Image (tube, rainbow, N blue to C red; front, top):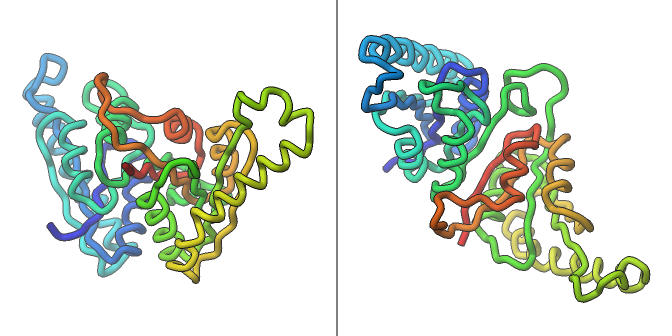
Length: 290
Protein backbone atom coordinates (compact mmCIF):
# COMPACT_ATOMS: atom_id res chain seq x y z
CA UNK A 1 0.00 0.00 0.00
CA UNK A 2 1.18 3.54 -0.78
CA UNK A 3 2.65 5.26 2.32
CA UNK A 4 0.25 7.82 3.74
CA UNK A 5 -0.87 9.64 6.89
CA UNK A 6 -4.35 8.84 8.23
CA UNK A 7 -6.48 11.10 10.41
CA UNK A 8 -9.74 10.19 12.14
CA UNK A 9 -12.46 12.79 11.69
CA UNK A 10 -15.59 13.87 13.53
CA UNK A 11 -17.16 17.28 14.15
CA UNK A 12 -15.12 18.17 17.24
CA UNK A 13 -12.50 20.96 17.43
CA UNK A 14 -9.97 18.28 18.35
CA UNK A 15 -10.70 16.50 15.09
CA UNK A 16 -9.94 19.60 13.05
CA UNK A 17 -6.75 20.15 15.04
CA UNK A 18 -5.76 16.57 14.28
CA UNK A 19 -6.45 17.07 10.56
CA UNK A 20 -4.30 20.20 10.37
CA UNK A 21 -1.46 18.53 12.26
CA UNK A 22 -1.73 15.47 10.03
CA UNK A 23 -1.63 17.63 6.91
CA UNK A 24 1.67 19.12 8.04
CA UNK A 25 3.03 15.65 8.80
CA UNK A 26 1.97 14.34 5.38
CA UNK A 27 3.67 17.31 3.71
CA UNK A 28 6.88 16.68 5.62
CA UNK A 29 6.82 12.98 4.74
CA UNK A 30 5.80 13.81 1.15
CA UNK A 31 2.95 11.28 1.26
CA UNK A 32 -0.84 11.57 0.75
CA UNK A 33 -3.22 12.52 3.56
CA UNK A 34 -6.18 10.21 4.17
CA UNK A 35 -9.21 11.67 6.00
CA UNK A 36 -11.44 9.00 7.51
CA UNK A 37 -14.71 8.87 9.42
CA UNK A 38 -16.19 5.69 10.88
CA UNK A 39 -19.95 5.24 10.69
CA UNK A 40 -20.86 3.07 13.65
CA UNK A 41 -22.55 -0.09 12.40
CA UNK A 42 -24.76 -1.98 12.92
CA UNK A 43 -27.37 0.68 13.65
CA UNK A 44 -28.59 0.50 17.25
CA UNK A 45 -31.65 1.77 19.07
CA UNK A 46 -29.59 4.78 20.15
CA UNK A 47 -28.80 5.63 16.50
CA UNK A 48 -31.90 4.82 14.39
CA UNK A 49 -31.68 4.38 10.61
CA UNK A 50 -32.98 7.84 9.68
CA UNK A 51 -30.59 9.49 12.10
CA UNK A 52 -27.72 7.40 10.77
CA UNK A 53 -28.50 8.44 7.18
CA UNK A 54 -28.50 12.09 8.20
CA UNK A 55 -25.18 11.65 9.98
CA UNK A 56 -23.62 10.07 6.89
CA UNK A 57 -24.54 13.16 4.86
CA UNK A 58 -23.14 15.44 7.55
CA UNK A 59 -19.85 13.58 7.77
CA UNK A 60 -19.46 13.35 4.01
CA UNK A 61 -19.84 17.14 3.95
CA UNK A 62 -17.32 17.45 6.80
CA UNK A 63 -14.75 15.32 4.98
CA UNK A 64 -15.15 17.33 1.76
CA UNK A 65 -14.87 20.65 3.57
CA UNK A 66 -11.78 19.57 5.51
CA UNK A 67 -10.15 18.22 2.36
CA UNK A 68 -10.82 21.52 0.57
CA UNK A 69 -9.33 23.51 3.41
CA UNK A 70 -6.21 21.35 3.55
CA UNK A 71 -5.73 21.54 -0.24
CA UNK A 72 -6.08 25.33 -0.16
CA UNK A 73 -3.52 25.65 2.63
CA UNK A 74 -1.13 23.05 1.20
CA UNK A 75 -1.33 23.12 -2.61
CA UNK A 76 -0.04 19.94 -4.16
CA UNK A 77 -0.83 17.71 -1.19
CA UNK A 78 -2.76 14.62 -2.26
CA UNK A 79 -5.85 14.31 -0.03
CA UNK A 80 -8.29 11.40 -0.04
CA UNK A 81 -11.43 10.78 2.03
CA UNK A 82 -13.22 7.66 3.25
CA UNK A 83 -16.47 6.85 5.01
CA UNK A 84 -15.89 3.52 6.77
CA UNK A 85 -18.56 1.39 8.43
CA UNK A 86 -18.10 -0.74 11.53
CA UNK A 87 -16.86 -0.42 15.08
CA UNK A 88 -14.64 2.61 15.46
CA UNK A 89 -11.81 1.02 17.51
CA UNK A 90 -11.42 -1.89 15.09
CA UNK A 91 -11.71 0.21 11.92
CA UNK A 92 -9.33 2.91 13.12
CA UNK A 93 -6.80 0.37 14.39
CA UNK A 94 -6.84 -1.46 11.07
CA UNK A 95 -6.32 1.84 9.26
CA UNK A 96 -3.52 2.81 11.64
CA UNK A 97 -1.69 -0.42 10.92
CA UNK A 98 -1.54 0.54 7.22
CA UNK A 99 -0.39 4.15 7.73
CA UNK A 100 2.97 5.73 8.37
CA UNK A 101 1.35 7.79 11.13
CA UNK A 102 -2.24 8.05 12.37
CA UNK A 103 -3.53 11.24 14.00
CA UNK A 104 -6.56 11.50 16.29
CA UNK A 105 -8.08 14.19 18.44
CA UNK A 106 -7.20 13.66 22.08
CA UNK A 107 -10.73 14.61 23.14
CA UNK A 108 -13.93 14.51 21.16
CA UNK A 109 -17.65 14.07 21.09
CA UNK A 110 -19.35 12.19 23.88
CA UNK A 111 -22.32 9.92 23.43
CA UNK A 112 -22.85 7.14 20.95
CA UNK A 113 -22.05 8.95 17.70
CA UNK A 114 -18.69 10.44 18.69
CA UNK A 115 -15.79 8.05 18.16
CA UNK A 116 -12.88 10.21 19.28
CA UNK A 117 -13.82 9.83 22.93
CA UNK A 118 -11.17 8.67 25.35
CA UNK A 119 -11.95 4.97 25.34
CA UNK A 120 -11.73 4.68 21.55
CA UNK A 121 -8.57 6.76 21.24
CA UNK A 122 -6.93 4.74 23.98
CA UNK A 123 -8.00 1.51 22.30
CA UNK A 124 -6.34 2.56 19.04
CA UNK A 125 -3.18 3.76 20.78
CA UNK A 126 -3.01 0.54 22.77
CA UNK A 127 -3.44 -1.80 19.78
CA UNK A 128 -1.92 -0.07 16.74
CA UNK A 129 1.36 -1.42 15.39
CA UNK A 130 2.35 1.98 13.98
CA UNK A 131 2.80 5.42 15.62
CA UNK A 132 -0.34 7.26 16.68
CA UNK A 133 -0.37 10.99 17.46
CA UNK A 134 -3.02 12.53 19.72
CA UNK A 135 -3.67 16.26 19.27
CA UNK A 136 -5.65 18.59 21.50
CA UNK A 137 -7.61 21.56 20.20
CA UNK A 138 -5.60 24.71 20.89
CA UNK A 139 -2.46 22.75 21.79
CA UNK A 140 0.96 23.83 20.54
CA UNK A 141 1.33 23.00 16.83
CA UNK A 142 -2.36 22.13 16.42
CA UNK A 143 -3.05 25.17 14.28
CA UNK A 144 -6.39 25.89 15.98
CA UNK A 145 -5.46 27.77 19.13
CA UNK A 146 -4.18 31.19 20.03
CA UNK A 147 -1.14 32.25 21.95
CA UNK A 148 2.41 30.96 21.86
CA UNK A 149 3.10 27.66 20.16
CA UNK A 150 5.61 25.19 21.48
CA UNK A 151 8.83 24.34 19.73
CA UNK A 152 11.17 21.40 19.77
CA UNK A 153 10.52 17.72 20.31
CA UNK A 154 10.71 16.02 23.70
CA UNK A 155 11.46 12.29 23.78
CA UNK A 156 11.15 10.14 26.88
CA UNK A 157 13.33 7.03 27.05
CA UNK A 158 14.22 4.32 29.54
CA UNK A 159 17.88 3.35 29.14
CA UNK A 160 17.11 -0.11 30.51
CA UNK A 161 14.92 -0.93 27.50
CA UNK A 162 16.14 -1.03 23.86
CA UNK A 163 13.78 1.21 21.92
CA UNK A 164 15.15 1.78 18.42
CA UNK A 165 11.74 2.43 16.78
CA UNK A 166 11.09 5.17 19.34
CA UNK A 167 14.47 6.82 18.71
CA UNK A 168 14.09 6.48 14.95
CA UNK A 169 10.69 8.20 15.02
CA UNK A 170 11.86 11.08 17.22
CA UNK A 171 15.08 11.72 15.30
CA UNK A 172 13.18 11.52 12.00
CA UNK A 173 10.62 14.07 13.18
CA UNK A 174 13.35 16.40 14.44
CA UNK A 175 15.22 16.16 11.14
CA UNK A 176 12.15 16.81 8.99
CA UNK A 177 10.96 19.70 11.14
CA UNK A 178 14.45 21.14 11.75
CA UNK A 179 13.67 21.19 15.46
CA UNK A 180 15.78 20.59 18.54
CA UNK A 181 15.35 17.16 20.10
CA UNK A 182 15.38 17.00 23.90
CA UNK A 183 15.82 13.47 25.23
CA UNK A 184 14.80 12.89 28.83
CA UNK A 185 15.55 9.87 30.98
CA UNK A 186 14.18 9.78 34.52
CA UNK A 187 15.74 7.63 37.17
CA UNK A 188 15.31 6.92 40.87
CA UNK A 189 17.71 5.25 43.32
CA UNK A 190 17.14 1.53 43.71
CA UNK A 191 15.38 0.55 46.94
CA UNK A 192 18.60 -1.28 47.81
CA UNK A 193 20.25 2.08 48.43
CA UNK A 194 17.59 3.09 50.94
CA UNK A 195 18.17 6.62 52.16
CA UNK A 196 21.90 6.40 51.50
CA UNK A 197 21.68 7.95 48.05
CA UNK A 198 19.69 10.85 49.47
CA UNK A 199 21.80 11.46 52.54
CA UNK A 200 25.19 10.89 50.91
CA UNK A 201 25.73 13.33 47.99
CA UNK A 202 28.57 11.18 46.72
CA UNK A 203 26.34 8.18 46.20
CA UNK A 204 23.61 10.26 44.58
CA UNK A 205 25.99 12.00 42.18
CA UNK A 206 27.54 8.67 41.24
CA UNK A 207 24.15 7.23 40.33
CA UNK A 208 23.37 10.37 38.36
CA UNK A 209 26.60 10.07 36.38
CA UNK A 210 25.82 6.44 35.61
CA UNK A 211 22.36 7.39 34.33
CA UNK A 212 23.79 10.21 32.20
CA UNK A 213 26.45 7.92 30.75
CA UNK A 214 23.86 5.27 29.93
CA UNK A 215 21.70 7.84 28.18
CA UNK A 216 24.65 9.17 26.19
CA UNK A 217 25.54 5.64 25.12
CA UNK A 218 21.99 4.96 23.92
CA UNK A 219 21.81 8.19 21.93
CA UNK A 220 25.34 8.18 20.44
CA UNK A 221 24.59 5.97 17.39
CA UNK A 222 21.57 8.09 16.53
CA UNK A 223 23.59 11.29 16.71
CA UNK A 224 25.83 9.75 14.05
CA UNK A 225 22.87 8.80 11.85
CA UNK A 226 21.32 12.28 12.15
CA UNK A 227 24.30 14.67 12.44
CA UNK A 228 22.19 17.72 11.55
CA UNK A 229 19.75 17.22 14.43
CA UNK A 230 20.39 19.41 17.47
CA UNK A 231 20.20 17.10 20.49
CA UNK A 232 20.25 17.73 24.21
CA UNK A 233 20.18 14.97 26.81
CA UNK A 234 18.92 15.15 30.36
CA UNK A 235 18.95 12.49 33.07
CA UNK A 236 16.67 13.65 35.89
CA UNK A 237 15.74 12.23 39.26
CA UNK A 238 12.08 11.52 39.89
CA UNK A 239 8.97 10.12 38.22
CA UNK A 240 9.22 9.96 34.44
CA UNK A 241 5.61 10.98 33.83
CA UNK A 242 5.92 14.24 35.76
CA UNK A 243 9.23 15.13 34.09
CA UNK A 244 7.87 14.56 30.58
CA UNK A 245 4.61 16.42 31.14
CA UNK A 246 6.56 19.39 32.51
CA UNK A 247 9.00 19.30 29.57
CA UNK A 248 6.11 19.14 27.11
CA UNK A 249 4.69 22.49 28.24
CA UNK A 250 7.08 24.34 25.93
CA UNK A 251 7.35 21.62 23.25
CA UNK A 252 5.76 21.17 19.86
CA UNK A 253 5.60 17.40 20.23
CA UNK A 254 6.09 14.83 22.99
CA UNK A 255 7.18 11.33 21.97
CA UNK A 256 6.70 8.35 24.28
CA UNK A 257 6.89 4.60 23.78
CA UNK A 258 4.54 1.68 24.31
CA UNK A 259 5.73 -1.87 24.72
CA UNK A 260 4.10 -4.13 22.09
CA UNK A 261 2.90 -6.82 24.42
CA UNK A 262 -0.46 -8.52 24.67
CA UNK A 263 -2.56 -8.12 27.77
CA UNK A 264 -5.34 -10.51 28.81
CA UNK A 265 -7.53 -7.53 29.68
CA UNK A 266 -7.13 -5.65 26.39
CA UNK A 267 -4.86 -2.83 25.15
CA UNK A 268 -2.08 -1.93 27.53
CA UNK A 269 -0.53 1.48 28.05
CA UNK A 270 2.21 2.07 30.55
CA UNK A 271 1.62 4.69 33.19
CA UNK A 272 4.05 7.12 31.55
CA UNK A 273 2.26 7.03 28.18
CA UNK A 274 -1.11 7.20 29.95
CA UNK A 275 -0.08 10.30 31.92
CA UNK A 276 1.38 11.95 28.82
CA UNK A 277 -1.81 11.43 26.83
CA UNK A 278 -3.99 12.91 29.56
CA UNK A 279 -1.81 15.77 30.79
CA UNK A 280 0.57 16.93 28.05
CA UNK A 281 -0.55 20.22 26.47
CA UNK A 282 1.49 19.34 23.36
CA UNK A 283 0.58 16.70 20.76
CA UNK A 284 1.68 13.25 21.96
CA UNK A 285 3.13 10.60 19.65
CA UNK A 286 2.88 7.07 21.03
CA UNK A 287 5.30 4.72 19.28
CA UNK A 288 5.05 0.94 19.78
CA UNK A 289 8.26 -1.05 20.17
CA UNK A 290 9.24 -4.56 21.20
